[in-house]
Image (tube, rainbow, N blue to C red; front, side):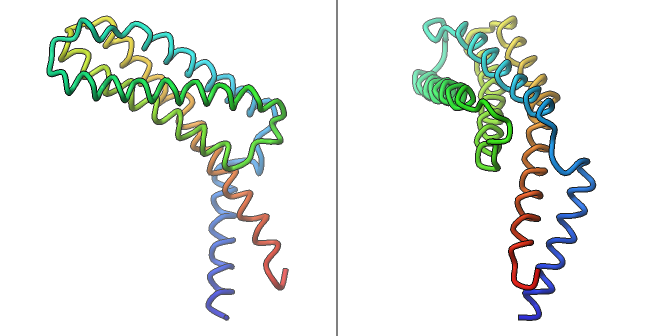
Length: 171
C-alpha cells in the first residue's frame, strides 16, 4: 500500500512538473479556437491538394497504385469524419482528452499520408509540382498544428491526471 502511495506522489509530482513546463494550467478559449481553426484549415488544405492526384496517370505497378489509392481514400474519409466531429464542437470547454487525441491522430495521419504520397507520386508520375505541394503541406503540418496539438494533448492529460489524483483516498 505504501508503494502505491509513493508511486502516486511521484506521478503527481511529475505531472505537476509537466504542467509547469508546458505553461498555464489550461489553454484559453482563444488559444483553443485558434488551434481548431488551424486544424480545420489543414484538413481542408489536405483535401484540396489530394483532389489533384490522378491515379490514371501513374506508371507503376498496379498493386502499388491500389495500395496508395486505398491509403489516400482512408485518409480522405478520416479528414471528412474529423471535419464533421469538429463542426459539432461549439464550446471549447467541451474538448476533452479523447477529442484532442482523435484530432492529433487525424492530423498525424494526414501528414504521413501527404508525405508518403509525395514520394510515390514522384516515382509514378514525375509530377514535381504536386509532389512539392504535398511536401510543403507536410512541412507546414510539422511546424503548425502538429506540435501545438501535441502540447494541448499533454496539457489536457496532465490536467486530467491532476484532477484524478485529487480523488485518491487521503486527499
